[in-house]
Length: 103
Image 1 (cartoon, rainbow, N blue to C red):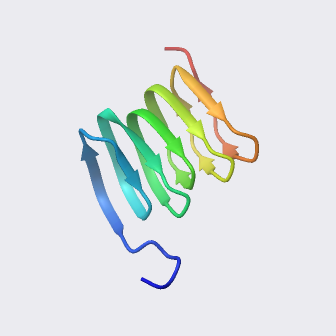
Image 2: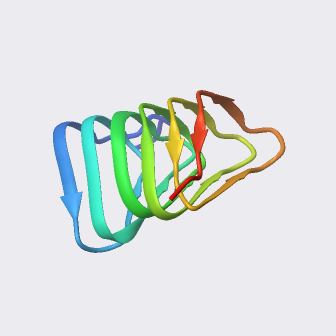
Image 3: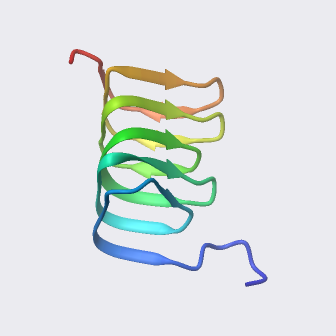
């Protein structure tokens, strides 16, 4: 593909037992019970996310719940609530929501 747009669009529920990196557009719900999710820089996620660890480098609209850690990278944009034992928000990240670290 010669353009910069992600070529994959998923509507519905996405689940995996293995680590996953998303660089496309996902609408619905993402569940990774025993794995880590990386949201790539070009990704647009409109979904609630449940995972062990979540690294956001792109755009997420939805709540993120992680058993261990959530990290928002410098160029990330998140609109939704975060719930994890550890939450890291790197300088430059855009975040609108609440943080719950009471686990």
